[in-house]
Image 1 (cartoon, rainbow, N blue to C red):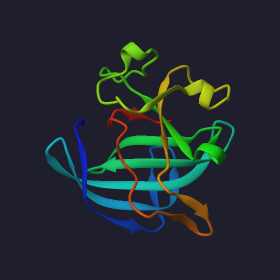
Image 2: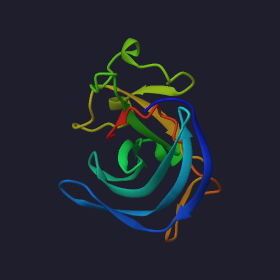
Image 3: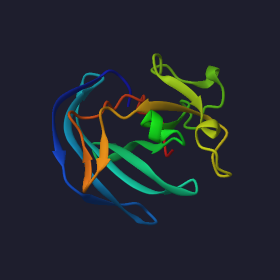
Image 4: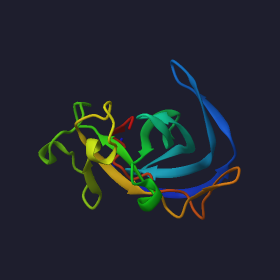
Length: 161
């Protein structure tokens, strides 16, 4: 799913759970939105939570479009300063992009980084990722507070961070 993304309407949601094939993940909250993507209308859900990933607890986000997981993000090592999440970039054949030549169209204007430099862990892959700063997010108290929904703009071809 590619194309320009236009958020038509959005509302915050409270805590919820999502069942992965091997586990259930709790999200502190997020957004439900109607969006126009590439000219078609879609239902979008964006969840914000935390889970153990790459050796420690990290902010983790997931974006679903019409019920299917499309993008996952995980906090970079410099998150306290950058407030940025990273998400692996997939080539058109669904394999991870390892060179700038393999990055599909649609990532122009985004910060492209080396995953392993952003998350220093033995399980961090050698591939490229998009790095996106959380938009005016706070993570205090019972959950995140957002002034407006996050931009779901990492190309709809990202994979689990």
